Structures are given as C-alpha cells and as structure tokens.
Amino acid sequence: MSLVRVIEIFDSLQGEGYWSGVPMSFVRLAGCNAEALGLACVRWCDTPQTWDERCGRELTVADIVSAVGLPRVCITGGEPFLQSAELACLVRELHKCGRKVHVETNGTVDPASLFASGGAETEPDWVVVSPKPPDYDVAADWSGSIDELKLVADEYLDTRLAERLSSLHPGAMVSVQPEWEGGREARERAVALVMAHPAWRLSLQIHKLLGLP
Ligand code: SF4
Image 1: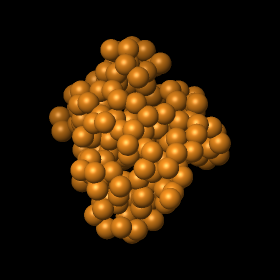
Image 2: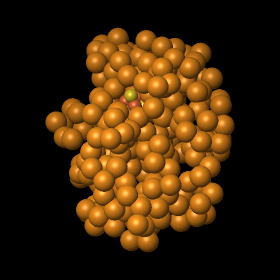
Image 3: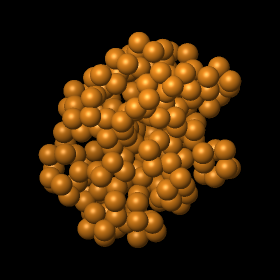
Image 4: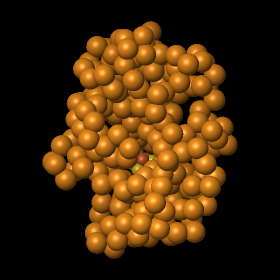
C-alpha cells in the first residue's frame, strides 16, 4: 500500500478560483520544489510549513480516503506532483469512492506519470496550474490538461505576461488572484487585468476573508 507524506487533511470552503465557495475536503501533501528551482513565490508563499519533504506524517492511501468527508476533494501542497506515484494511487482510490478530485500544482513537474498510469481513473476532475515567477515555466506535458490557470497578481505579473500565459494554455479558464500581502496595489492590478479581459475572473481567497483554514 502506498504511503503518502501528508501535512494536513481538513474540510473547508474552496477559497480560490472557479470553485470558490464550494465545500471541499483538502489534502495537503508535503514537499515543495520552489526553493530548489529559485521560484519567487517563496517570498509570498502562505504554506511554508509544506516545503520540507520530511515534514507531516506518512499515511496510507486508505487512511486518507477514510479521512475525507466531502464529495469534492482538493489535493494541494506544497507541490503534490513531487509524490506522483502516490498521487495517482490516491486519485484512483478517491474516484472508486465516488469523490470528484481537484489537484492544484505549480506546473513544474511533468504529469505524464499520473495521466499515463491509470487512464481516466487517475485523471483528476479539475486541474489548477498556478505558474510561478520569475519565469512562469510549466512542464510541456501539461499542454491540454489544464482546466484553470491561476495567476497571482504580484509585482511580476503585467498584462503582457498574463496574456502570454493565457495564450500558451488556450483551453484553460484564467483566474487572477491578488497576492494576499500585496495590499491595495496587488488588488488593483488584479482587478485591472480582469476588467481588460472579460473572459477571466477574479479570485479572492475567500477562506482567508472568512478566517477559515
Ligand atoms: S510552489 Fe506553492 S507551496 Fe511552493 S513555495 Fe510556491 S506558493 Fe508555496
């Protein structure tokens, strides 16, 4: 039985993006590659407790499946694709129990192992890729598999860059989210981007506004 390194499992409202406001069970996996890759999101990351791949605890997939209570489960991190094989197993078992599975990733890890390992059974129902500054690189194999592109409006994100990222992933809806610590400037940048691109939408991290986990 696969062991998965997990930081926490909890129920809350999805606070970000297209599914904002919908109750979900969250499974937060350990480990993040942002520091090793030199990504600038380490400056504003709100889950630094996930970075160390040795943190949290090891759970079996069965333990995790029995701990989630809601019809939709969001697997997040850290960077969940650092545990690709375990992730595939977890998605498959959650599907067997009738759950819809969302996955959030920074897009730097090739997802082929997940998508190739079990066909539709291991394919998440909703994939959110949030490319990170300064280069916003997304592994080539993500092409065509992204449901939602989440762009954090920090000082790196200007109109040209946001439009380029959107054009690279034409099938993905775009959510623009003010960087939480960026204050009024980040909020205004996010709103201006969305107002100039009516097909995009604003993501406000409503769980934080409501004081939820
Ligand atoms: S990739 Fe995500 S978890 Fe990792 S440092 Fe960046 S924002 Fe934080």
